[in-house]
Image (cartoon, rainbow, N blue to C red):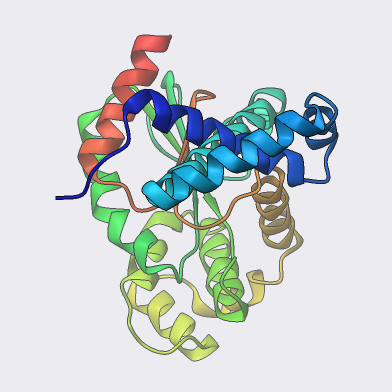
Length: 258
């Protein structure tokens, strides 16, 4: 059986790793840490760290995990500051489709890419969530982050919105497995009863292009790393294809916070 360090010593060593990390980074924070220790103290930290790693190498991975967690928390906090500052651009814009209750107080913004398999995976769960939460206002922001094919599908879905068929066409296109092309878009449009010629032309409509640009700008403003990403009010940002239960739990937290 592996012999573990006493908890108090382990914490001391972990703190040593963190301090050493601060000493090595070229930031004002790192500079402040560097000037806070005497040469003797710095040497002692290094000695503690070396001895600790010999006894329990997992300390290093724990320290890295802790630093990554802290960095992620700072990033999320910064992104939520952007959401609070530009709330109208996120939840109250008039360029995006709103599912559920247009006047609902439980506001969720989803950033999604139509080519993203995880975004496709949560489509059915979102329908269930909307049906079960009468006070949910779900704002859909489509962002083409996966390349040229995503741009093509994004333009088509937004163009379908000009025929009041955003959701119908979105579901049909995102469930279609054929290779991306204008012919595919035309076929899907015809299948759901849209004016396919108009849709193809509207893909270059300034309203469509402007909405796509605005959504991409917002995604960049919160340093979005992938899709789907859910902004829960101005309280949480949840990346990834979360489960229906996790989304319901997030709504419950949002409701409690109001």
